[in-house]
Every structure is written in structure tokens, then in C-alpha cells.
Length: 244
Image (cartoon, rainbow, N blue to C red; front, side):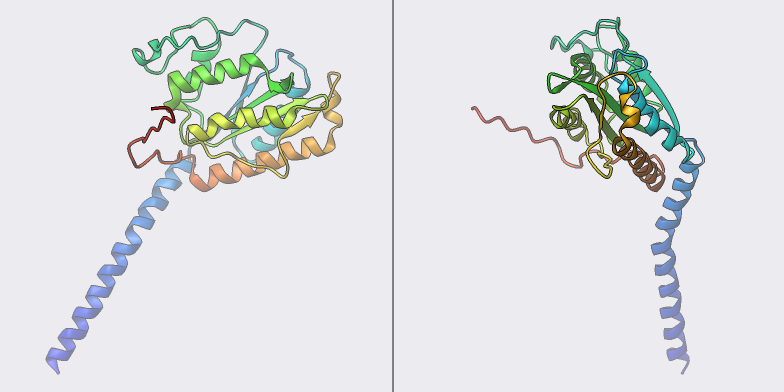
């Protein structure tokens, strides 16, 4: 009888120990997540329109207002009308990681802000079926020179157009996110808002609703992850060129 009792006690103790080991990581993760959630999260919004009160501003402002209702801060930076350099493939940023060699436009200051931000949203007017060329130049330089500030963080793009070309511009803006392991936040429709004259976007009821839904989804993702970026690749990068 004593041997059976000892065996039962051993099994009980072992099961309790195993249960505590199984629960401990979950509790530890929960604690970490809770601590992260105590910090106010922030989304950096990049307005790629040179017009201060244009339709792109209306679309992004609708997104920001809705996101702030969830207790998440927003900072909007507008591209303005100053010249923007394109990448010249000098690779000098490899010698000074985190900064482009050209320091006379928004590139370095904008990517530096991403170090403190939890997510990134870029909006652009559609020019010739494409995003504003200055927007593309900045994204290419920021991601190449300071990709670590963006990697793994949720992202979304918004295209604003008069009539056509928005889906092509929208796709162009989204493609770099996937190369940086950034979760692309979706909405109820493609993130497109229509308007020709300044202020017209305020009349696009569906477009503005799409912005609010995008904000709700962004907030849900940030709160679910506690603002923790997606983990990076677990394997060494495997490059493959088609011409050998």
C-alpha cells in the first residue's frame, strides 16, 4: 500500500510540475505583453503629397482620427515641395548604417522617427498611374539605408486619385513592405480614396469608411501583438540569380 501511495504521490507531483512548466512561458509572455501595452503605441504616417490641404491629407486625417480613438498616437509627416534625391547606388550607407549619405531631404529624419514608431502608413497621390516619384525615392532610400527601423512592423499604403491608376500605385507602395517582413494591414477594400479638386475626398463616403476600417484593423493588430515587430527570418538569406 505504501508503495502504491508513493507512486500516486510521485505521479501527482510530476503532473503538477509539468503543468507549471507548460503554463510558465505563457504567463511570462503575458507579462511581457502587458508591460509593452503600458507604453503608448504610435503610428508614423507619411503624406506623400506636396499639397498641404489636398485629398491625400483628407484620407490620412480620417485614418488618424479613427486610430486615435483606440488610444494610439499618430504623427504625420508631409513630403512638402522640397526636392528629393533618388538612390544613386553608392552603398555609402553600408559604411554608416542607419543613414543615407544624402542628408539634405526628409530621408534620414523620417527613417529615424521609425525607430520609435510601431507601424508605418504611407499615402500618395497618383501621378501617371504611379505613386509620387519623390515618395518612391524616399521609401527606396529609407528601406535600403535604415531597413532595421522598419522591419517587422505593420504597414499600410493609401492611394488617392482622380479616376484611374490607383490600383497600380497601391500595389507599388505595398511591394516594399513584403520585402521587409512587414505585415500588411488590410481594410474592407483596397485603400483608395477618390477626388479631383481639393476637398473632393471628403465626399467619398466609401473611401473614408475604408480609412476608418483600416485604422480599426491596424489598432487590433497592434494591440494583439503589443507593438512587438514580427520576428525576422530564421534562416540565412538564400539569394538566387536567374542568369549564371
